[in-house]
Length: 76
Image (tube, rainbow, N blue to C red; front, side, top):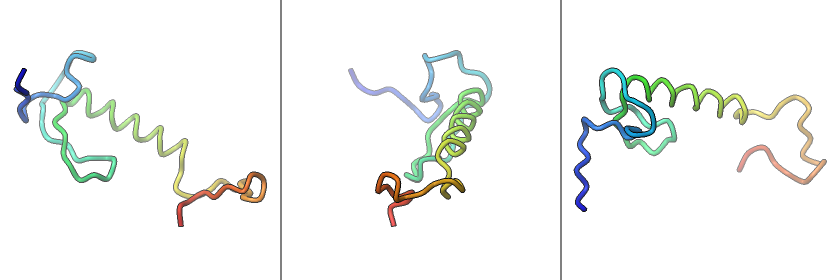
C-alpha cells in the first residue's frame, strides 16, 4: 500500500483524536527533521520532552559519584 501521508497529516493521528492546526514542528530529538503534528499532539510532545529532560538532565546531580559504579554522566 503506498504511503499517502502528507504534510497536513499529524504523525500521531489514530493514537488520540487530533485537535487544532496541523503543521510541521521542529524536531526535539536533534535530527533536524520537522514532523507534522496537530496542536494537541505537539503540546503532548513538549510535555514528554520536558519530563525526559527533567529525568535525564544535562548535568549530573550534586550526589552523583562516578566511582560508585564506574559510570560517567556524559559521553565526553
